[in-house]
Length: 77
Image (cartoon, rainbow, N blue to C red; front, side, top):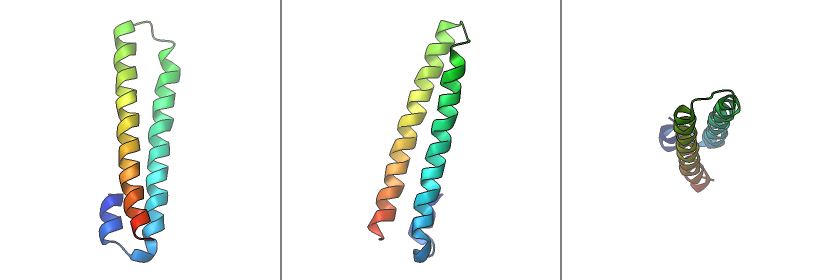
């Protein structure tokens, strides 16, 4: 959504798009950290490994998306 706003939204609000992307990124990381913290109480090794892999994928996707939005935002400054 931020990508669309950056391309088609009010040019004066472009920095708001960057802040929104940073906030979304922080939310993803907060959720991932919450899951990782709680995994220590789960004894199912396969579930634990699967969730750790999922968390790593989510973190990578969030970083990639954040970087794309920030590149777009900074190209308008």
